[in-house]
Amino acid sequence: MSSPFACGVMALPLVAFLSVRFEFLSYRDNSYLTCKKSENKMASNLLTQMGSATVRECFFQQEPAIEKQNASVVELDFYQHHAPVLRAQGLGIPDVYFLSQQERRLVIEFIPQYLTLEALLAATELCEKLAIIHHSPPKPSGAFRQHSWSDEQTDLALSMLQLPTDQEAVLLSFRTCSDELFEPQQRVSGDTNAGNWGRRAKGDLVLFDWERFGYGSPAIDLAPLIKGMGDPASINQMVERYRQAAPQWSVPVLVRHVVVAKAWLITEVLSILHHRHPQLLPKYLSWYRATLPGWLPMAQHLWAHPQG
Image (cartoon, rainbow, N blue to C red):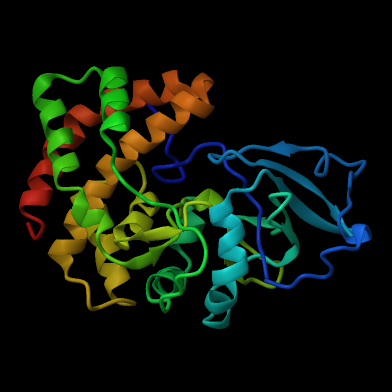
């Protein structure tokens, strides 16, 4: 069975081409606020994503752009309070053409080059860019996504998966130790799947879609970059690669965190699908039911013995 996670764990239909710089051209001049619909296919295409925003390709002052309506407070606050700091440290973030907290509206740069997971992993600067996020100085202003593994989403996932008792127990054991995933007070993107990265025409790597920006272990950002559910080799490879940019993290700790993050994302994905994309549920449930019987025992062993 082919994996629905070809672009990583959270490879749902996501916005593929966003980007931003914190520069308000004008807040009050409505001439800046008009996203003119194009006659071509690009501008009439309504994009979808995991979040609740409506996302549309458009033109802004004759330049291709992305408009997000009903943007989350977390994403709006990210661009207003945090993007300038991260951009100054070298992280590629889309240019902002218009931002309105009152309207909950963003108009941002269109990023032309789509990246597959393979192309993203081939980017030598990938982990360096992630480390910029994780090591950014504290800035308490603005809203953050409060990442957690709730009992409600666990119960929902288990009711849909209908796992055998022993496999259910493994997933619940990861839920029990999940606090270690959310306790680290480091910034995380929260949604680093390949569909949220692109390159500008001049080659800059850009990360967009910031509505899950919050705190936690770097593993929250590493897990979506490991294809499918991952195996010991791919998990260790990602951890070792990240440690070249962040050597203060030990291999055992990060491996455990990645395993827990992978398990947590099962419940996150199923909860999002259940509430926002129910038409996709059968495909994902079928894949999980075929994959988890082999993955859960392996993950349990890897968590207990992260170095072999």
